[in-house]
Length: 443
Image 1 (cartoon, rainbow, N blue to C red):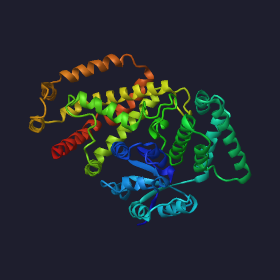
Image 2 (cartoon, one colour):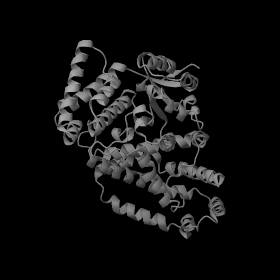
Image 3 (cartoon, rainbow, N blue to C red):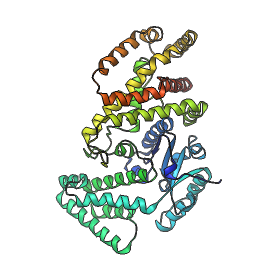
Image 4 (cartoon, rainbow, N blue to C red):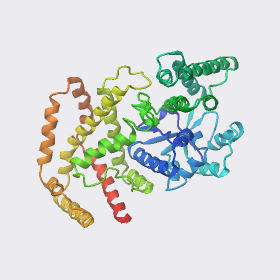
């Protein structure tokens, strides 16, 4: 198979850098089956909301990655070019990356891994080692040299001796690099940290260095997110809380857009984790059966995130990490943007539904749910009267008087671009239908 190579600068459209399969993230997982289930949910969300998913080629060189991607039709994600591994520019393909790991990292890897990914990968994104390494090194140097940096502050709160030892370790490493002119090696630093630190100090250093590494990886392949640290790792730098994230791909999809749509349109008839029982094969079908519809959904979804970020003032636009307060405010603005976009779509979405389609939908729903639970009368009322729509529009007008001119102008852009077409609701209705199909099959 001849590989298609995409320069990072040529990547366009909604895209993301998927780091949760990285070996260091996997090591943190206490239960691999549970972590795989978590990976499934996040990956499904990314497949629905992003055109392209870039993943570090080196992160595929392990048994867990092979175990994960070799099941449930996931191989097709590489064959179709949806997942594009990032390959260091000195290598031509995955096989060369794999063999380099065995030769220089002395890793004991099964050739089955090499065969599987080599056969299925169709598109790659080459990246520059020294560009990435220098940026990563400079960010760590900032953490070392600045006494008020996030990492040094956290280490100081844990153990002042650990802070001093960390500064000494990295300072010696930087001096050595000046002599040898080698690139900054993440694996070498990670091994030194594992040997010379323990307990909370080791965790704080390892997690933070991994965080910088993932941000660096996303940057070098032109896949930076609007809130980089929250989409790349289960780590809140502001609270040192590993696991609870204010903003993530999963939280935006489930806790914001899905919650709003299920409440305003479907009267909470369906579960919030609606895509949990939808297979990867069906997710791909949702993307491909109507490519124009799914593409518009992904574009408007991304536009809502972009508009929210533009409205919410960030103290320093070039800052590497957002503060806890900034994350909370941005999360609230993302929710506002999705709610307003969905409200704008609702009238058009409902007006395009013919009465016969409405009846078919209700009777089909009733036939599927009889014996499971009582259907709220409000779901039937929602299909035939405008009471809820008027209520939503009234709330929207009240809020509209409170937003400033800057917000109005920015939001006007998204309205003009999509003309209130039910881009989000129409595609989400397809997700609902696919959920219903799979629910009946599981019964």
